Each structure stands twice: as C-alpha cells, then as structure tokens.
Length: 374
Image 1 (cartoon, one colour):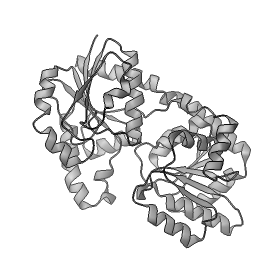
Image 2 (spheres, one colour; image 1 turned 120 degrees about the vertical axis):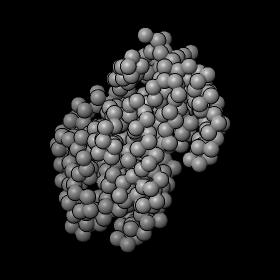
Image 3 (cartoon, one colour; image 1 turned 180 degrees about the vertical axis):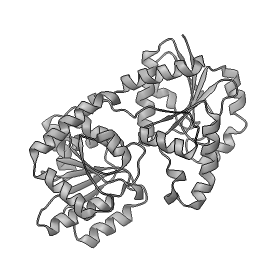
Image 4 (tube, helix red, strand yellow; image 1 turned 45 degrees about the vertical axis):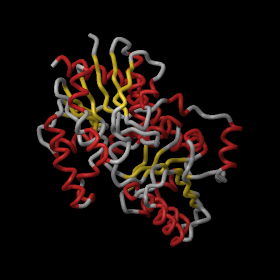
C-alpha cells in the first residue's frame, strides 16, 4: 500500500533538541524503509527542514509562510494557509508535532506529544489557562496521539479521558556513540579542562532539570570528605545565574563546571570520559540523556520519577527528588564501585534495541497503515 503523508515540520529549527533529534532520525529511517510512500514536509519559511532528507527521492518540500519560532506569529501566518494547502496536496495522513494542532480537512491527523509541561500544576495559572483548552481540542480532534513514553500516554489519558493514545518511544543511533579514539577523547578533555574522573549531567540549564540537586549533592560529598567533580553540560535555559549562585553559595567552584556551547561530538566524547551520568530532573516526558548514556556504556544515577523508572529500571540507581543527601549517597556508591558501574552499563545496553530508530520506524509504519485503513 502506497501512502501520501504530510508532516507539519514548521516547528523545527537548527537548535538542538530532543524533538529535533527524533524527527530527523525517526523519519529518516521511515523514509528509507518506505520508498513507495511519498512524504511532503511542510517546512518553516526560514529553515530548510526537507534538506535533512535531501538524498531521498520520495520527499517533497513545501515552504510555508510560517516562521520556525514565535507561536503567535506561526498561528497568524497559518490562518490563511493550511486548509487550502492540505486540500490541494490530497494526503492520506497528516502528522503534527506541536500545538495548536492543525487538523487536516480531508484525511486523518496524528499528533506527537513529548510532555505535558504547559498544563502541569507548576506551570502557572496563565500557562494552564491557555494551554489546557488547546490540548483538549487537539486530543478530541486528532485521530491518534503518539506519546513518547507510557508515562506521557497515561498523563494524556488522565488529562483527557477517552483520548486515543499510542506510545512510540524516542530513539538513539548507537553508531553515534561508539567510543572515540583516545586522541579525540584527550583532546576534548584538554580543551574543556575536564578532570581525570567526573560525574556528568546533561540538559538545558532550566529549572525543571533540577541541576541544583546535583550541585547540592556535590557539596554534601565534600562535607563527607569525598571529592567528586561534576561537569554540567547544557544550552542556556534561563537558570544559569541561579546555578552559578548555588555553586558559589556552597563554595564548590573548584569541583563544579557549568559548560555551555559544547558541540555534539564533544558531548559524545564526554559520555565516554565520565564515570557516571547524574540526571536529577523533576519532570520529563522522556529523558534522552538516559538512552545516550546507555548507548555510551555509562552508568546512570537518576531521580526517582515514573518515566525514569519506565526507561531505566535495572540500568540505573535512583534517588528521591529534593533529597541531596540520598543523591550524594547514590553517587558515592557508584563512584567507589567499578563492578556496579559495569553491571549498570551492561543492563543499559540490553535496553537499547527498543530505542533503535529502525525498530521505531517499523512501529510507526504499522501505525500509519492502521490509521489510514480505518
């Protein structure tokens, strides 16, 4: 069965993100696996998203009047565009990757949801007041919503009873995390002045990543007489000043580095240079650093949240949120025990096949066939 599929990629830019990574690699695999299917990529006016798949003859670009960033600007630019464009392209399926969802007039519409941050209690009443009706409308109108984890799927069903939801995990390409040469590793170490051993934390420097708890734990370890360096890598997200203040308040500037502007290849090297990953996020819909660490053979210490249990049970040690002392104890036990670190790394690698983009593309193809048939 040949399908004609439209992908609303107007939310994507060149800025690194988990959603960006998923779109590039999941659809890269799907497009290669289904050469008889035709894909139209509706791209923003200022980013050539379809060029990410330039070697695929079954991909066609549609440059829209929508900018990649600015929710209000995108909404206004799309008002007079979508209905006419989608009808002209005569699609079998249309998938959206952001809210507000664009509902295709003449075919089934799918929606991918990464998390429910805008409607959570800690989002603030204004955010919830705007986002909640938008999400309710999308869940009522789309034919199927794809959640990136079972945890997010459960959150969606609780938020909108009767929502039609299926889980499709995020993925990783193991070949991207093969250990670099010793020369490349030591070059990265020298350039960023990394210590011989360290704990790594990866994520945007924003409040929900809860990086303060990792810094607090390093201070607890210092007070216990254990010197454990922490290297935090992330793009600016608004919490930089607060994190720097936390480092200064504890007096741990000699053992905590806050790094921004780290390139992809160097980050992958850091996964191999580190002794373990600490991931203290308060809320995630998934947690891509977990599977990147697994692909790198890096053991994990993570906050005890439902989604991290779902993804890393048996391959991580967990600590309670808002408990720096317990966090410190978990870090210390792994820091001092190479055998447990190796066991966790092996368990993590065993979980990787379910996150292979080729496997996920097969799952998505089956979903597309099912939805189009119905």
